[in-house]
Length: 391
Ligand code: ACO
Image 1 (cartoon, helix red, strand yellow):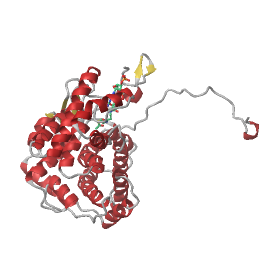
Image 2 (cartoon, helix red, strand yellow):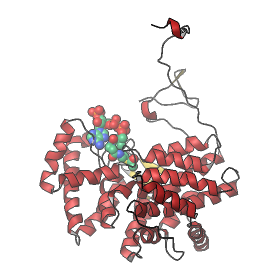
Image 3 (cartoon, protein in one colour):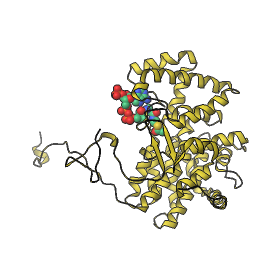
Image 4 (cartoon, rainbow, N blue to C red):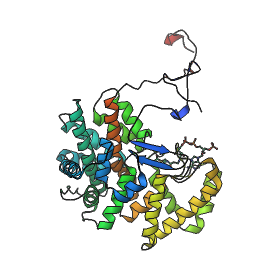
């Protein structure tokens, strides 16, 4: 693996690392990953502690301000988010109308966030204060948008946000029309916390690259959504659930995976560019699934299949650093909450929006436009041939 010195040079030559593996693209205070020991912390706080004790609102403050809030600050922050949750009628309409064409939920999300920018008069004005406000609005409104998408794809009318509910409870309420139990609210809160931030992954990097030209924040978030949509990134959680369905019963797990591996196919929910050990987010989600399995037979079945896949994969590929990632157990927990598979990646985005905007604000604070190079491997200099002389 190559590395990049301060000026992107190695031994006097531009360095190259496919997929930017191991390349440092900047500094960040948001999160730290130690891939060798499977460790993740947001602003220094281990993810397990946040999942145990924090809320999505508090974690969002942490990521935006690089510190935990006081009680008063959290109260104000929460109220701001709750007030910003409403979206224009036109945005609901574009979601409902476009859903009729069978567009994927992530494409609907990309479209709706882009459209939302039209209603933000401050979209193209950069100032620290305005950008911070835009970031809060984007967090709050993206939650409303994804919930509305969850209903629109089933031909249901959207449900507007309610001010007196937490971000987690409000999302489940907007999706299903019922105020969730305290237990479901807490499980969803943890899902949002676990997805809130993850260093410089493909979607966050996309957002930072886009904002580095000093364009508007909506453009950067739209790019991040487009990146997250892919099956190598946020789309893997949906593929995991489809795989569990296809397998159906625990006794078929090993044979199914062995066949896939023989065909050199990747197993969704396994492997990571940075983690070469157990993704700590997967461990938290697995332990939630384990508790739910005690009272829910579907969860029990999916979890049993999942555990057998995990054992088989670690036995066969653990030496290569292939372990479950965040997407492996999240679908089982989301299914328990009544969230359908095609909404898994939008749920990921619903958590991750705060990480995206936190990185975008961080990039703006100390910006330099991203402008890397490629190694030219095309033809050597040649003369232009007029079209009538070409063979
Ligand atoms: N199943 C089987 N083998 C795998 C898997 C997998 N899921 N992931 C990696 N490998 C193998 C590769 O075949 C390769 O083997 P080789 O050295 O014999 O050729 C080796 O492990 C390294 O894999 P790369 O693909 O080079 O790793 P890279 O860092 O480029 O990709 C990625 C990481 C995209 C996550 C990959 O592991 C993958 O495709 N996983 C499945 C999709 C997935 O779960 N994505 C979600 C990631 S987490 C997130 O974005 C939220």
